[in-house]
Image 1 (tube, rainbow, N blue to C red):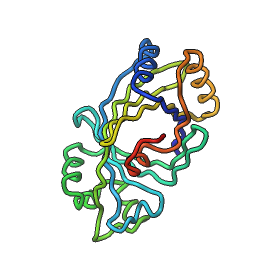
Image 2: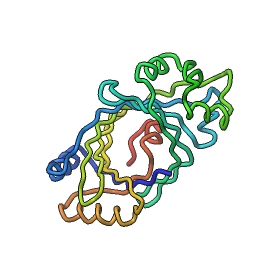
Image 3: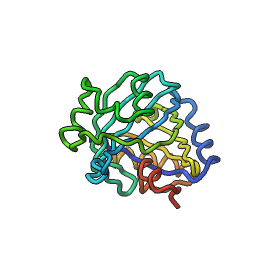
Image 4: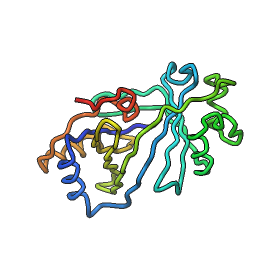
Length: 202
């Protein structure tokens, strides 16, 4: 189970301000490309699941993830997640030709998709995706991720923090933002849900 605090920032100016304040704590920045897949008959989405390939930093790394049963409330997201690395060149081939994905017999996640969701001969279809620039910071014992997400229909800005004590992490993060006069709101949808809706949250 992945548990994260997710706070939405209203615009690029606010995002840049948070980035500047956190700059002494910066660890790294990743360029991510997220591509999603479903069964030909919505075999995954009908059970609140999705398969994702995430490419990092011009294909230096690729992670395949199975995410299921998302729940987001009061700025805290909970979702079942299983992930593993795959060869980026294989990942790219699967984006171009999704029928290749179920053929990756060495992948534990692909085996799960076949066994638990009945992905068979009709295979998987590519839903498309979006790009994300993620800056990572180590602040007050927390790993913060500042996201700038590029959808075809606009930009979204978020700050996230994965934590085993999300309420405490949320309190710390909200106190930090308030102390600097930074506007924010609780995220009420995942990046994938926003992507599928085709519009930015209000």
